[in-house]
Length: 473
Image (cartoon, rainbow, N blue to C red; front, side):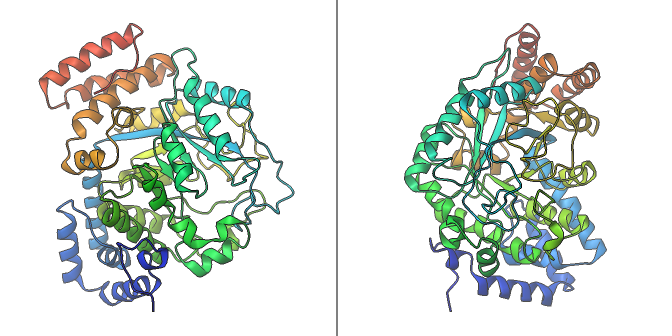
């Protein structure tokens, strides 16, 4: 039997099948033990997180009164760490060439119906200008795994191109990278290129299912994929983002595995995941989500998000436009702190006036423009934030985490959110969005704790009105 060890660098030891099964048995045995559930909730109130066993008990508990307590606590913890800010980003698909055989992704090698496309640097430039003209400042670049068509040099060239483009008042200030597991040397190259977060979804932590779902290609290697974040950290990338594709396997197994991965990163590197993403399997070309019998309801999906938020209170949580506006509204309340807006999941989708569907990685359920999403968030009492200051001020890895865990990050993030929102309002917003935004900023300035900071923000807002850009704390 393989022994569970969160400090191990061996995938099957830090994501341990026997430990997960024992955890699920423990959760089933204790889900109605309200005395234990209360103790776990009390521990969660300390804002220091829960381990995978404790959080699994809460996820299994179906007592309505306790579920409401869990939701209320998740909402409060999210406010404590992230306030009412929602960070905005967009995915940018560079290439759908891929050598893997993943059964749930339309980019799989055997799919002959999807047109293959790879952006030239000139096309990357057009995409970035289109994204800047929407108002985006933060991108997550995506590409299939293909050492011939998408080598690391191509990814690095694209990052360089993205950062180089300054169109009107637009600028992409942070590029996060979501590409296949790679070598320490390649992670060093990505770090040198100035990336923000390295993101890699596990898809599923269940090894047998993982190998079945990835029958061919380099991604078939479970250990190499699962140990990627340790190599990324070794390569100097200190902000990493994890996630699973909910619906591929049993959600409770994935939930426990996800938290074990977060515990492993904290135990080995002293820094847990900068972000945790919660995507669900969705329809796409050649892919029918009903092929997977592990899909989960909207209600359970939201409960998972709430339990992640209280188990890993410091992490940023990400939801994409895979989800409908209704689901996004509920899940934001329960813990999500970053969302995409105006997304297109096709290669070269932003430069086209009409949304192309032929190269989409998945169907988009929230088709609203960025302006409409920003407007919706503000009406719901949130501050849409285009801030990238922490990354550019060197507040990454353990430096970011210490500020976040202590609550000190609010002193930077709240004013930065208001100033970047002001930029959006001046440069890109519709008249209605601008009106709502100006009122929101005026109201939110009063929530800045320090008078000196409040004074500086007011001065800078005037400067932004007069055409200056990119102020930050």
